[in-house]
Amino acid sequence: MATSDLQLYIKNGCPFCHKVTSFMKANNIELPLHNISVSDADRDFLIEHGGKRQVPCLFIDGKALYESNDIIAYLGKVFSVSAVAEVAEKSTQAADSMSDGASCTIGGGCSF
Ligand SMILES: N[C@@H](CCC(=O)N[C@@H](CS)C(=O)NCC(=O)O)C(=O)O
Image 1 (cartoon, rainbow, N blue to C red):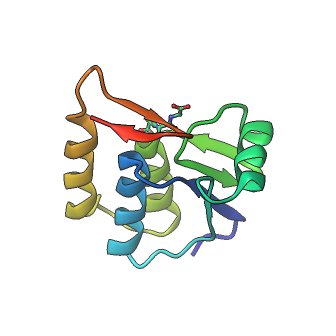
Image 2: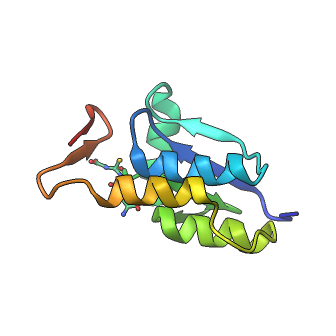
Image 3: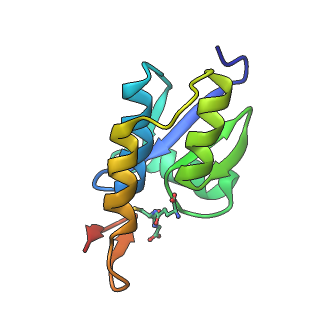
């Protein structure tokens, strides 16, 4: 069980966020979620304290960890989950298969 304070920032329609939340669901990991699509305060906090407006972002005792793969690796370690869940693998493939022209923005959702 994690002893650090963990807060996960996500947004609607974000495949990288989905990858992280799928991994959490598959491994029964529950964390406070902050959806910046619905909360301007959460969006402002992310930008101010994380340094950039990118999701997913996991705040670990107030320190920002970006990158879905790094977040999954961290959660796997602290929650003693040995392998990346299959469902997260599938999401990884979906996220990685985004074309070069794909865009994924805070305000406008994702286009592929
Ligand atoms: N390599 C990153 C990609 C994360 C990413 O592209 N997130 C998009 C949303 S799906 C984002 O935050 N974009 C910010 C912006 O466009 O301003 C990861 O795996 O977490």
